[in-house]
Image (cartoon, rainbow over the protein chains, first blue to last red):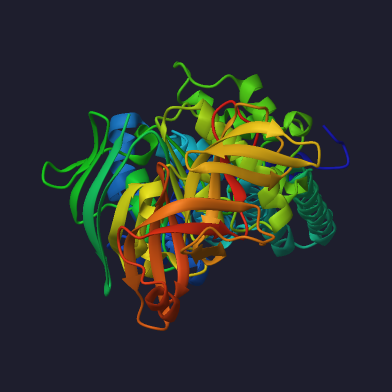
Length: 232
Length: 362
């Protein structure tokens, strides 16, 4: 463990990475599915689904956090069921922070993937089905490889958003050092105590570095994948 | 195996109502753009679900509106060659070619090496479609459709997006394909030249309806179909056998009505060829003409006279076992007193090889 960080600082950084990673990985399949449905299908209630997905983007994060607490808290109607039957508690745990981060990052992820799906010519998918591929196979062998750059971009965007999530997280899971204190919550806490500025600044630098790294990584992977697809 | 199509479908204010049979060989759907040709093959492919009717492939029901049967596209076992190729950009040419094999692994289908050799794409296998020329892409698309082990081949203007040179490059492959496979091929085109060269069965379409369908040489030599075919494209074809390669560079062919001389045809003696003669390239004479530069003069008998709405007339003639069409003026038709049964001579200004039969060169 790096000794230039205090244990509290270090746990905030590693917790944030863990929370963001799980939030991204677990929401990615759902993000692809929702983006596919929104891009390729017309159905009753499509606008409602679209609105629901985008809600966290336009609501104040504190409101989203409050809604999460009401539904996924121990007394919330989903939270109570999870607790009773599966023994899963989300409120005031790091898993809850992951849920909050995933919900907040979801609209960005879906938008990026949806754009990529809309850029795929449906005629290619038609051609695949005439060659004997069922819907699932068409998706796996034609659509998915072609939207991969968009999926990667969406995932990294969601990861970066999850790293920075503050409002919904602090409302839903509070700010318990070592348990639910993520990087942004830690920066906020250090700024509340006299003499904490230096520690806050260290964390700010780490946050900037992680964000930049994520951006570069997404550019690099995206370009490599695009090259593989277009290669002649 | 034969494809039987009978269905009706409405798109907004366009009504499609067609019925025809497509036996083994190439069945060309011919008509101007907007006549509904592509919709017909999309219905056969399952990309459109018609309002009513039945589509059968041999004994297999592909679609039956009454019994509410519609086999999903991916279970119809088709090879569909689209106008724009539609190759998968992320896969190599080899992966594109074998794509259908994943889903139809077992079967008597064409061997990979044979198809690749026939289409001349051996050198492209490891490349991505992005770097191919239009003609190469289209050849790969044809190969991909063939290798899917299809029971039916659908081709929607596969040559329309190509220039003349590329067309000339691909047509021989399609002719060879017609000779080598026994599955029905449904071929959409608005080019009479392609149709005359490839079609064994012809379905004429206009405004969503089938105007006429039947064996290509019958449909093409019926004067009643001249308006639908277009006066410049109208013309019959006759069968001939290569008799000899003459010393002056001409090839002598033997048709049922007599000899024909063509500029060198690259085919072995004995090869059966289909010769296309446009109606506007035939001159009629009541007596055997003399002192004429034309080499090809066949004795014939008038079988039908169709007066057009303008100053023109189309005469159908029997020359030996074959039918010919001649486009002349009404005035000449009157002056020569042409009527069914009249004996005359057909002077052919220009003849071209339209089709080479199996085993012959294209």
